[in-house]
Figure 1 (cartoon, rainbow, N blue to C red):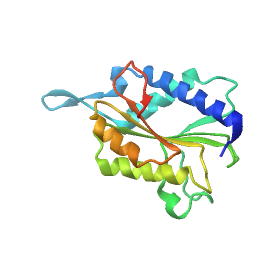
Figure 2: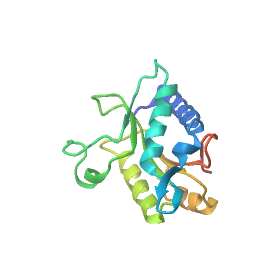
Figure 3: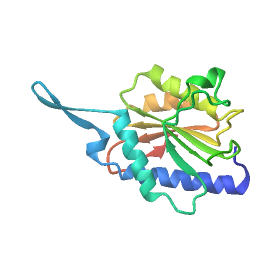
Figure 4: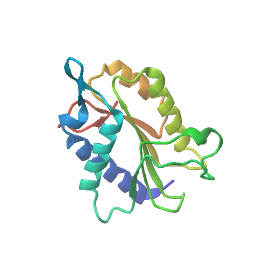
Length: 179
């Protein structure tokens, strides 16, 4: 885990990047319109949202930011990801390539329509990722879409100190940390 003043600065920068990137996600990528037998419908599609989030993050990523952004890295057969960690595969990671001492953040994304057990599973995974041996500095559960505040607060109460819940309520506005 990064530590000290540099880590605090880098986490502040990351939070600013995440807010800016989510603000850049448009309605087309927030909810996917797809054809049905009788016309079309709109649905949350986590993968579409994640790809656009990755794209928006890359667009605003400072060239001098000392971390890499990777989408849904495959951690199978990785020596640090055994046991409980073997099935943890975050949507995004912010880290320094090739070293385990500088894992800044792991991000899990879920639509607001996700069942509570899916949110719990991602929170459990993030809690593992911010603990030794991988020891990411921060875990973020990013929930997007219309949602009752109680659902977000309930998720937040399950998180612990180094996992945050963020809410991206609608296209064109930035996500923000929950309570």
